[in-house]
Amino acid sequence: MWAIIKTWLSGNALRLIGWSVAALSVSAVLLGARQAGRNAERVDQLKKSLEIKDAQLRATLDAPRNRGELVDRLRNGKF
Image (cartoon, rainbow, N blue to C red):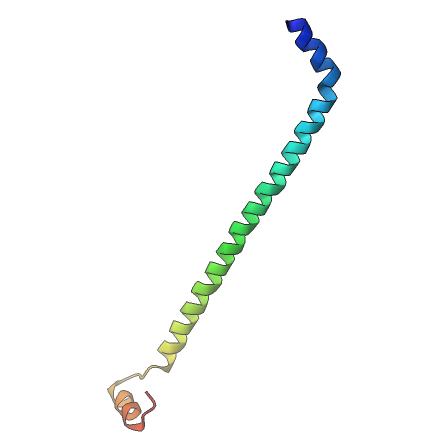
């Protein structure tokens, strides 16, 4: 039995190595594409959170600083 397996492996070793390398290459490309997709989602989420933070900061800068400014804005209709 061992002799049959040994002769088959010796005749097909290069073919097995070639298919193994091809399979590893394809799996590496697929895993790389998957990771790139995850990174793109992270970047999009980071951009959205930064836009929200900037909008909050702008709203804070435009807010009335004291009660007098609030009253003036309400009277002028700019609030």
